Amino acid sequence: MAYDFKLLTVERLDRVATVTIDNPPVNVITMALLAELDRLSSELKADPDLTVVVMKSADPDFFLAHFDVAAILERPIGFEPQRDAQLKPFHALCERFRTMNKIIIAQIEGRVGGGGSELSASFDMRFGVRGKTKVNQMEVPLGIIPGGTGTQRLPRLIGRGRAMELILSGDDMDAETGERWGYLNRIFEPDEIGSFVENLAKRIASFPIPAVRQAKTSVNQSGRPLLEGLFEEAYLFEQLLRTDEARKNMQRFLEIGGQTREGELRVNDLNAELGDPCASED
Image (cartoon, rainbow, N blue to C red; front, side, top):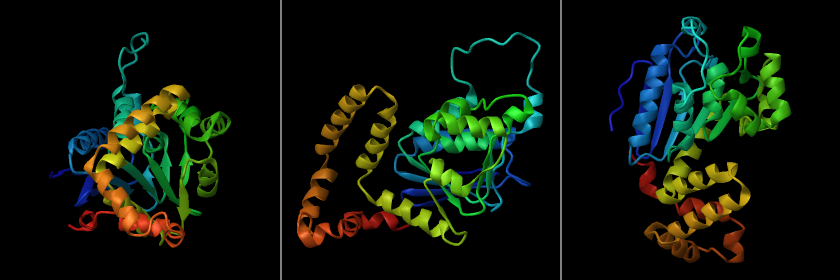
């Protein structure tokens, strides 16, 4: 599938797509960028062979600054607000990334804030740079609230009290705190993050596609009552057990040393051997 954008560059290497955001001067989510992100999400979702998407920025100081405040001021307000019957477009965009059967990884090397933070919180993983990545929800100081899923997503991600602090203070959350609170999976030195994320994306993409996709589907059920989630997990497990990929890889695992003392001591290496070597080829 060919991807054609002005503010986004998409590079495809077999099952991995790397998306680079480039909207100078600070990657504000303008209406033009929002339109491209919306179209990107639909095209990524529809790509049948894609497994992993890495989102990063052309500007090492800014991942996504926030939504365009000037555009917010232009929204019509000459009527009483009503409760919506369907999701707002930005909410739908975040949910599309959260629920699509691709693994979405954010490589956040600089600042992320407002709607950019809310969108990132909808991704499957977020990685940052020690001493450089900063997260800021500036909405309350502006007189509004994080209205792009933030008041709902952040408490689920980092806990209610920490979300309240981040949302109400308007202060930066540094990379170290973001990692400790669970907003960031891990943090790295500036020259380490790129290779780690690239290798992680390739590793995930090398594994059986049905298992990768159903793992995300199952994890997404964790917001349901526990018993409902367990029933869904069991159903998805039974589905995968009947796939050719699972039968082949489980047999291969036993052949290369699984369930032996020597093999189990290096099970991470065995897992890498189970990856499809074609998945890392162009």
